[in-house]
Image 1 (tube, helix red, strand yellow):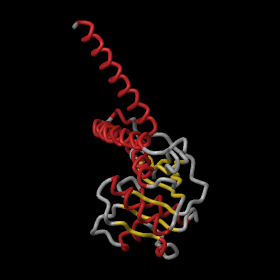
Image 2 (image 1 turned 45 degrees about the vertical axis):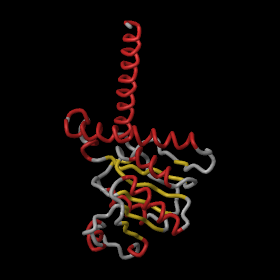
Image 3 (image 1 turned 180 degrees about the vertical axis):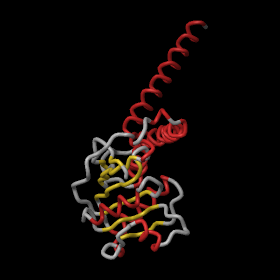
Image 4 (image 1 turned 30 degrees about the horizontal axis):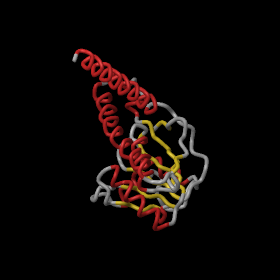
Length: 215
């Protein structure tokens, strides 16, 4: 009985250590800067949220890195005129190349909405724009929904992670822990799906070594 208790305590300690180590790796990824995307793709998908995600997607589209851009998970009250204010210099030359997706309510919904959009345009290579802390889970969900599509991450580091250490503010630390807790089951589901079906045809991710800082 005592031996069984010691084994359980050991296993619990190992699990806790793995959890903490994984979180530290995740948090370190969330604050690191990335080089700019240089390779062109078929499309750009921006997962809505704060941290200048939409502005960054518009900048990439203006650079000619893709033919079209999807903004997924748009608030139903948001209209194209609101995007023009975000674009600063207007959308005259790229307005017709931006699609707004209003259906997605979460990251899984973003992936499903992106799948339908990519299938409609027959895109096989996508640049993914979202916050740096949100990127790992986004790639997992998009990989699940888009087998065979190459995903190029273009993370934006939020100012709250850029300006000061994440551990210096309780709110920022809670945000990272909350996202990490969402990432674990998402990764587990994806791994289980990989084991239950052939590996051929799975989505590939051309992972950038570091995320890009926001303005």
